[in-house]
Length: 474
Image (cartoon, rainbow, N blue to C red):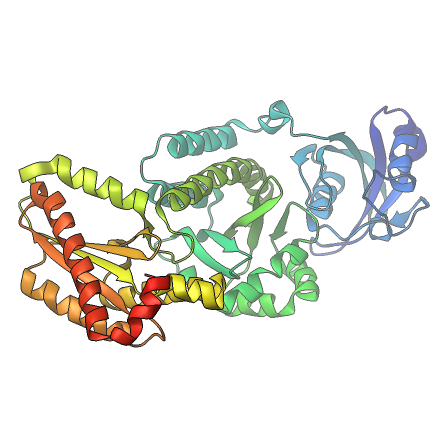
């Protein structure tokens, strides 16, 4: 058969691929037999930023002569050439910042144990929504249900667990999980997971510790520039073992036989990974198609959710000390005031002022002053829950404690004075008061503030040697 004529008869970038069929259902060499001009140009004159291992196309060369080994590409070639299936995929490999619209068609020619298929590709610089939606009804329905759940939820974490359960059942997998990563803090955590009732697999939370990020950061290289990693049999597992032996050892010890792993990326930022474990290898194509589109949606929703969380943190947190900021305190006081007598409970107020901050800034610089503020916040955390602590501004912190009696509040203040001694240079002027119910909170705030300034004055009376510092500081 004239394979070159087949390629030349197709306008889009096309080549003919040969697959060596082995006994027992495996495969050997996968070679690029022939290619039309457009396809050969993609190898000999690749797009900017792309470098081929070999820059001259040679018929019947193994495809790995030109690019990194890709198990997904091999799977499609095998199913098309050997199993005689017509296949299509629309994917965004990590190694290229483009989308590939790919079609694999079986060729009715065999040479002993050598089978053939055509591989045709079209390159899109941006994702084509029509191509993404060109999936089976079952997959489209599952992905649509995912979109509806995520967009309509008021409890994102709970909905994620429901979505993960749906994906696991659709993939007929034993386990499914979303793991988020933070490369700056070098940590990862389970966002959601679902496991089959009869499974002996442990929760991923049992494995995620301070050292687990070291394994997670190897996954990108293990995926090796593709858009996912699919291990559906022993042959695939051995390929992964060559790339990542430590991870494969941990997978096998945990009872993992098959796994599909997708990275979750939004605007080229890695958010984490989603994977399914111990699925039926015959469903690998459908699982890849399902997760390919689902991860596209999930990554977008995750990025939006994480952005909202970041904005919420920025609007409610003091970035230096990590405690709540004045804006969050004002919102809470307004909320408590609006409740009036409906909230029939006491509210404790503690005002603190850090002595000598300006003097430290003037003498030792702002870095030393920042350290002092962080230590002051740490002293407060030793005594009070962080969610109750607010940096009201400058060197002032406020603590708002619900349902506390005056005797207990007085004890807490004594504990704070003791805790401040654990940090060099940290001394507080402190005032506190009790609001008998929410309608009385503004009176308690004023009273605590007045008592705090009285305490500051008493501090300087008792420590006259500090008075000179006070004149240039607080």
